[in-house]
Image (cartoon, rainbow, N blue to C red; front, side, top):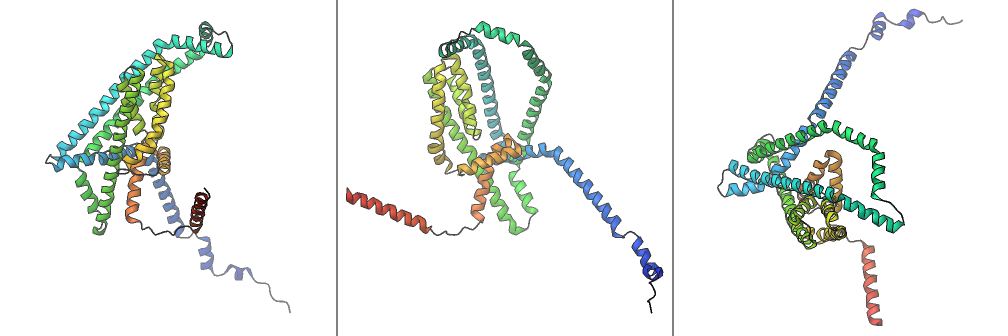
Length: 389
């Protein structure tokens, strides 16, 4: 006998089960509302981060400036001077050095550009004469002038774009001045209230963390101040050496050019030497072009002398960072924060390296037996050569 087919009522189940399947889960509205809230908070945080990244960079620079200045302030405060007065004195001296260097640099650049413009016709005549002699041509300066006048539309377009960007350039200069003043102001506050700020930070942490935080802070002060000290010593030596060499060549403003070279080459990481060499070479081109070649040779030779003889001896007592690690840190800092990150990368890396050296345990590593066998073979070969001779 055939079985009865199941009825629709049997498939549908009880009425309560059908209603529970058709009804939206009770947790779903709350989950959707929570997702929208989290999305809104993420967008708000992203918007705030983009707005505040400039302020974050300013505070970071001010913090490192205060770390660099704090050893000098502590030294004066230990001799009985009030900490506020000591902070003001140190920053007045620093501000005077910066303003003096900027004024001297501006005067030097104006004089150099004026000399280049005055000597430009002579330099063009000499260049055209050299091209004609070398490549057997018959160019004249008048032909070059006619070619430039023929392309006057291009020159006019450049001039118009430069005039249109003048307002943007003035805004950039004004914004840079405002950022400089903000960094100076925050640096003064952070340096003057350094001990109070350390106590305030430690008051938010458990007592067992106080020694670690204070040790890390002291390491940051030591390494940042050591970096500034080592760079200053290298800048003085470089300035004296280049000033003497430029004076021997007979270049005007040799002392100012030497100071320019020492500061830029020592405080601008990696490419500072090559940037600093441009200005003395331009000055030499306006007086005696062959001197530009001698300056270039001296710059390259002195850079090798500084990298392999001076810098290891000076930084061994202050900031000792492997050159490859230093270059990687500069590139990473530049990629993250631009020129500011490149400047702060080395003292930050030295601080992290010193902190890891204190709190990361290291283990003895056995010598590689292959290296020992190679050394034994080398010693045996040397003995055989001696006995044969």
